Image 1 (cartoon, rainbow, N blue to C red):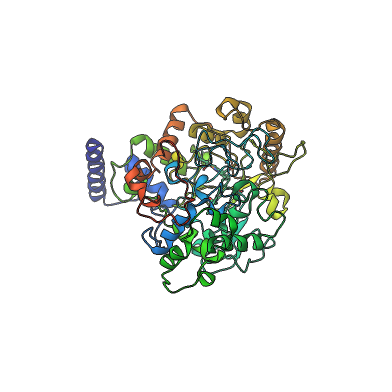
Image 2: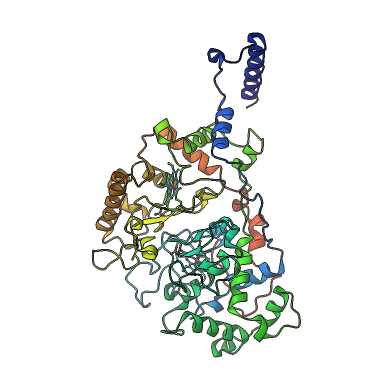
Length: 500
Ligand code: HEC
Ligand code: HEC
């Protein structure tokens, strides 16, 4: 490292000397080759990359009372209709903010407190077909505070005025409102708007009998009543200290249950907890802040490939994974394999395809388009893709280089044996054909790239440099996991089994 630095200093010194002697800087013939660090500096500057997505934002802290309340809510199965599923069931801090499963399993798990690999759906469960009943991969809740435009793989929670931080203070569309129309109850930001929905999904949290057939609004009222202690099942659970938890969390010691225990406040607190999960202290950030030895040479070469367009010999990743949050928050067709039970779309019976963004916009070009996910901590947030079809980071990176070829060589053995794959070929080929059609029409920015194995390794080294070491440090993560000192208001907290 220090050798490399000396060389840099010498080149700079020589350049200064040359231009001083020549007295005429129009002579290109004396231009010296740039060092690797200088090249990285040039491409990042050209793409407005600083390494720090936090600039200009006010970020909530986990020590704030509201975030503490949110943590208690995030971990309780009381928000699950049948008291068997919590937010944390699929978004655990020690699983990278996700569940490490291709497709999530929410209600009716064999062991509700067993999270991650090994979690399986009960065979006597509703709609059980052998595999997971949740049709998509659970994204990480870490760093969602940096999404300003859309949440969910298909962006069905979205800011209607894209310029604001986390949709704050402006109109937000949700599944409770029509496409393009603001949901008056969406709350203060995108995370709060999103937190209104997992409880409404029968597969994720609601179950198949709780408030069955009733509207989202009445379901949320039923959950409020439960936390207020007006619900028989919670009474049976033996304890209910939620009023004290809300009084502390909302800093309203005299507030009544009627005033404080509302779904708006539940969603707001869940958002405060999740928005405090800022995990951005990665080696790439340190490198761009000036520590030239923070990342390896391979990672630097990977960064160059990432930010250089395919036409210029790069991998062209920065076009979509743009900015310091590594996403344009737009939707693109990349044709990742379609596994799982899908969203009811497609020509093949049993309609286990997933049309992605098209489901919201009804625009033909959006068929099979999914949101560009951010890449912070991406090495820790597998499996990858909207349906978790890739279980290695290398495979999901290679997919981008040549989607058709990647799918032709797709190895089914990477999936857990129970993940549904009956129509994988027909469904995925439909997406790949759509990609081809968009390319022919000049509407795709995904360009096939031929990279050597060495270059793929360099891209991977770069992606690994986006991991905040906190993720591997139990003590560092502990603040987002309620310990014995944090009240468990209903005795329904998930205590993850096993090694978590
Ligand atoms: C059964 C597993 C499961 C449970 C339980 C669950 N989620 Fe999720 N979560 C998912 C899946 C799957 C998605 C992606 C769904 C989609 O995009 O259509 C998701 C998406 C999200 C997102 C969007 C992230 C992004 O990158 O856009 C947030 C935020 C989130 N969940 C928070 C929560 C909260 C808060 C709760 C509890 C109220 C919760 N989840 C409960 C599985 C789960
Ligand atoms: C045309 C836009 C586009 C380009 C260019 C692009 N990506 Fe992506 N990327 C996406 C989209 C969209 C997804 C999500 C697809 C899905 O979920 O089905 C994605 C997913 C990923 C994922 C999985 C993330 C996760 O959390 O599941 C990784 C890793 C990734 N891209 C890396 C790269 C790399 C490395 C490059 C350059 C070789 C690249 N991408 C180029 C749009 C793009």
